[in-house]
Image (cartoon, rainbow, N blue to C red; front, side, top):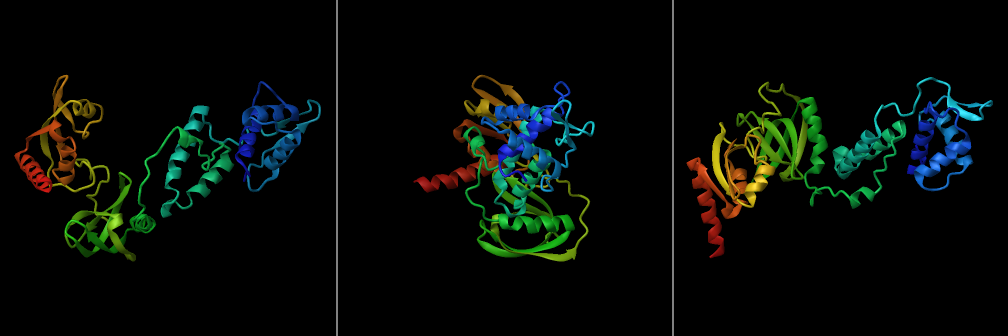
Length: 335
């Protein structure tokens, strides 16, 4: 494995030179020059000699590159036609996208289920020589990812994933913060879902005869049993949250919600729709009237109330009444 990122980059440069049909049999001096240009520091010929040796023989790199020296041309070449340590035929733009994705995924390195992520990236980096360096903080100067303040509940991810994959029944103690009670559950797990840096579990409860959603940070004790349970055929992970805004379950049937949103939020919901079902009925410079077909739940109410007086819900009446109730309860806190 490369001891530093420059070694990985040098391997890439050497490989590109050896596969360049327009410049056959590059010399040590030529390879050293090209590597120096790429990494921004002077590279000696003896370093290139060692790189060539490692590319041929290193079991850690596992390239086993068929590199040979041509005495007549005094340069190097691959003896195997079409060989390249870069087995993935990607463009420079695609390699850059891969580097970006690796850095983005690196934010999850402290989550137990992704504990081997760094090791995996290093192996990919070595095998395909793409110059990844997930410890490099340069990207963070230009791109800042959302990070969770608390990692509570992340320790359950690996166990839950194992249970889902093997159809094992999960048993756990769960704290309902709304009802202020702790209950025991035995469920068949179906899906792990992340929303706004919090992880949730969706599973079937035989006792309640329905699918339930649990926040991982409220699970107190969890046990993965070895009891296998055949999964139901009616669960579709793509459809389960189709009518939801957020993670909360709604009613049995979604309803049409009609509302008017005034500026400046009107422009925002045009750019970022509240839901994929959003349909604009009327639009003007100062307001927008729209409909969405969604589950009616508290999460929807909180989203609507976040617009303050700029949002007026016209129907359904049940939602209007619930919003009035919530506003009334809220106003009591400021008397």
